[in-house]
Image (tube, rainbow, N blue to C red; front, side, top):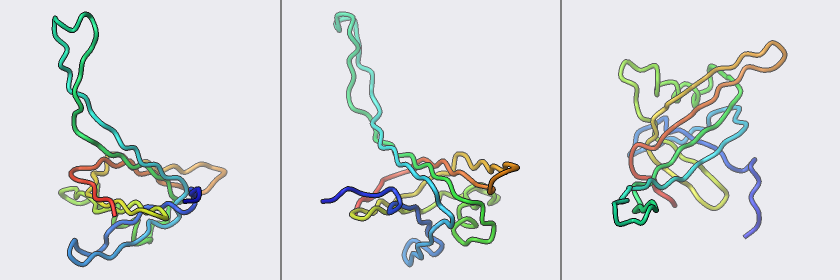
Length: 136
């Protein structure tokens, strides 16, 4: 398999339903990262001879990405629902690479908008997985 360009990895949000998804890119994407993590369960006791001991805990996933602020973009409007709905909703997202697609429900944890004097306005999204991540 060949090396992958960052340009070929992007985030899509479901603007349809779970059963009939409509995968929509969040327009103007620039950077994206996905972090796969594994928690730890501390099992250190007095017999550990001064060394920490742990067991593998739960897996977790975080996605962060930036985009130019395009306020009428369908993907951006759906992402905003993660905060602006009267009850914020978890977002059905895909992270798409040339070889894999990752899908899961993510909770929007931060959405800063930056408006510098000498550059285009941008929005950043920080999201945490709220259940199982599917890989296809």
